[in-house]
Amino acid sequence: MRLPIPPKAPPVRTEQIILFRVSGQLFAVSSASVQEVRSVDTLAGAAREIAQAGIRKVRHTVQRGEHLFYVVNGAMHFDLPPFAPALVFVLRRTRTALLVDGIEKMTTMTRLQALPQAFCNDERDWYRGVTAIDQTVVPVVKPEGFLTPDELFLLDSSVEPKESETEIAADASSAPPSVFEGESFHPPGTIDPAGLPQ
Amino acid sequence: MSPQTDSGSFVLLRLAERRFAVAAGDIAELVAPSRIFRFPHHTKDIEGVILRRGRIVPVCDVAARLIGKNLRSRRFYLIAQRRYPTGTEWIALPVTGDCELISAEMIPASEADLPHVSGWLSHDGDVIEVLDLNALTPGPIVAQPNAPEEALQQEAHS
Image 1 (spheres, rainbow over the protein chains, first blue to last red):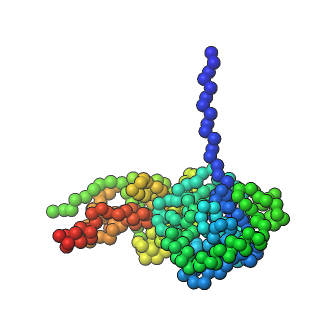
Image 2: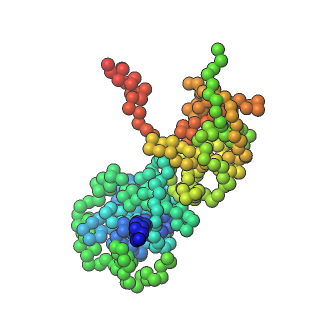
Image 3: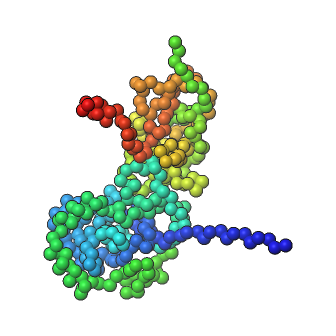
């Protein structure tokens, strides 16, 4: 008699995440949400200052292809002490470029727990949830949570159209190489993927 | 006429010199303090979270609201169940001393009592507040379809 084949356990759903620090505090973001990682130095020439946006955490814009991104200071967004950012994450499907201290490592998340309902303020817009990595609890940021529709409206109204047009032209010719694009690393000599802590 | 009482089991917890009670059915366990993980947020009274049995449990220091000062030291976390419109979640309350399970008669709170008081009980010569964790700890604000203020406005316009 042949025993029935036991059903296979469904594979554990995993998600690649980037652990990064802002003002020393550890956060995670889905690597699929990060379009590009640049060092702040390479971005300096391409960034344009916003004259009067009225939003303290955004002082610059940067043009990537056809799209204008607002550079958000992560420390100001999270009310953390000021820091000297080293990297900027250009976030996919948003208009946010996020200034961060640096990348801690890339890893895999197997479980994302909803933010406990006791957290009932702005943080519900900031985080997709929380996850436990190496016995540490890390909030997983929501890429679209860095700028609200109202903030984007205010920023859009403070950026002149002419400025963005000239930035597109400048960007196409003089953009320095990216450290990281999409979901795979490129070896432009800035960061070697093998050198990233896992 | 004596006030109506509800008899039941309660857990007495200590915050500095004062004792408070919580319905025993709302308590999951009493655990030793463990590492608190902190991350940025804007919710008052929430210190951070602890990891407990695979769950991420928010730590809510209610001492400032109940005794007017934050706790300098804590001996245990009382893990309680907090009810939300969409379900029940654990919440950790720092306490400064041992907890005690008692059976007692509770006198329900009156309109004059603070919202976080669900009743009163008498034990060992003390009159002790029974806490309503839903009112004491933070959670999403649920819109009331017929809130009294709205009803008053409707009445004024009619």
